[in-house]
Amino acid sequence: MPADNRAPVLARIAQMREQRLTRALIEAREAAQQAQAAASAAEVARTAAERECGDARMLFQASPACPQTRLWLDQRVAEEIGAAARASDQRARHELAVDAQGAAGRALDQHRVRSESVAAHHQTLRRAEQRRTEDRVDSEATAFIQSRGWA
Image (tube, rainbow, N blue to C red; front, side, top):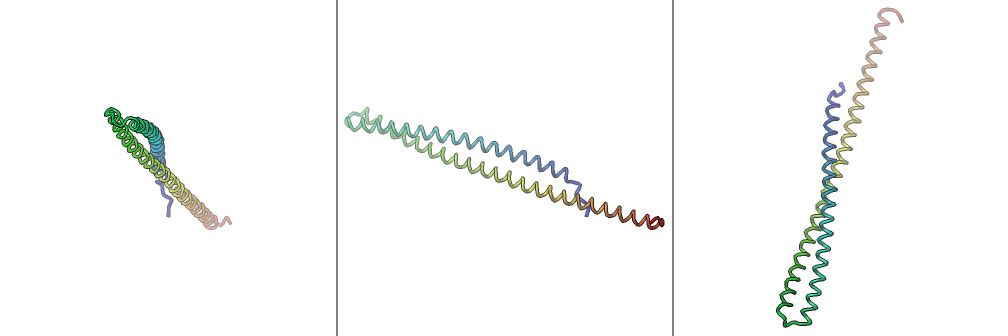
């Protein structure tokens, strides 16, 4: 069985695929970092909204009859709810980005293992073909020498 002559083409294809997977991993890592920053900012905003809502509650408890205080409290409660929802959304986005980064890393690792395995297989085939060629040349040379009576 002759060695596969497509090995250089397959190696180039594997190299291009590794570059694409590496680029995808870099993009996934950047997305995870951006999602982490957004989640941190959303958590800070949620904490600030929670603090302001607490201040509004204390002010409302001090003067419950004031309509302005009631309005301010309602606005702060709405802001706190919105900030909590945004923080939750950003945490979920961050988790998805981290999962995507992990998947990209695993895909790149699997590709490298497969590429190394295929390269080792092709190298083994080339070596076997080389040994068969050398054996054939040796046997033909021996047969030629014997046919001439030189040996």
